[in-house]
Amino acid sequence: MVSSVVSYTVNACNIPLEIFQNIVEYCSIKEQFKFFSLNVYLHRTLKIKSLKDADHYLIGKIGNNILQPRYSKLKELKMNYSHKNMPLNHLLHLQYLTGYFDNNVTHQQISNLTKLEELFVGFARNINFNHLINLKKLKLLSCSIKTENISELTQLEYMDILNYDKIDFSTFTNLKTFKISGHNNNKLNDDMIIPLTTLTHVDINYCYDIADINCLTNLEYLSVNRCDNIKYINNLCSLTELHIRLNNNIDQNGLNRLTQLKILNLDDIKNPINIYMLTNLTTLDLYKIETIQNTQLCYLTNLINLQVIACPNITDVGHLTKITKLTIGENDLNIDEINKLVNITQIYMFGFVSDDVGGMTTWKCPFGDNITDIIRELKEQGMLACSKYQYIIDQLNLPKLVYLEYGYTDE
Image 1 (cartoon, rainbow, N blue to C red):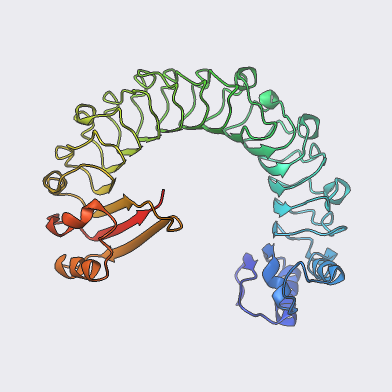
Image 2 (image 1 turned 135 degrees about the vertical axis):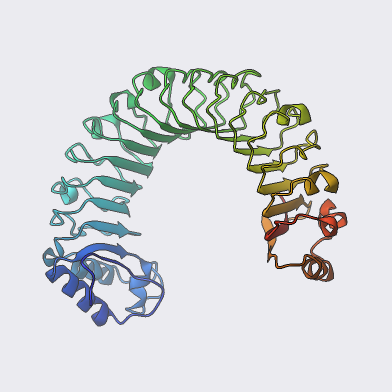
């Protein structure tokens, strides 16, 4: 029996094409066909080894077979590739479209898709999207799109941009979520930010031309990566989650008034920064932070989740007894301090090595009633030899511990 709404994705399993097409046709006739993911696995049903080796006529034939007019009830479509003249314009009920357009998809091919609410496209070139009047979410990945191509999409609530042309974002005054990378020509500046007062979620990367975001007083989430001119964010009093990475100009007291923060992530910040007043924090993630010391953590007694990696001046955490999840790496926390955290159920212990090990290597160990067997196995397999924790791990005495993850990384 087929459910009232069908979502279908071709996986790596070898489904005969005729069976697959029968499923598609049945669902479309019954108007139950909601979602289809058109990807490389479909080619395997025709025994095509790779897209590079494939006959382009066959690729076109597959697309035409699946996206022909009798499937016009389709609501969602994902394409991992596109080809010239791929039929799309008859999909009048399409609400969600994601795909890599390259130079293959034109304005004419999507001119009728006015019911689209979400559009995620990659490598699109000079396509005018202004006719998509119901669009709420837009994501552009490595596209060449000018401001005039999207300027009339005033109902947008979500925008995620990695674009090759400069865009003026100040007209999108209904945005709730805004993500942008300043690579290429994405030059976000203060004047563009001022009108975007409805924003609640902002993620900005490599935006060196922006200095003041304090006008965004409705922000609840903020992630700032390599935006060195941002120094003060004290007016953003509605923030509950904040991530700052590689921003060394943030003022020491730049977070003082953010007392609603629940989640704080500081990554590789060299200058001093005060966090002791953030007493509502439940999650604190510190990576390569040398300027925060034990005295600041004394006030953060509501912490439940603590991550401290490469923070040499944090050695005392025993008073943070609400913590249930602890992640440590390359620290001088002694075993007695860790054992004071009697409510810990999960602990993650990582070390750094100088050799190239291809990133993170971990061992995940669910705990039973006894830690002894787990520790013995780790020692026998030499898994402890990569980190300073090899000398303390068998001294863990955490009565509620149910999960240990141990490993190392080459940074």
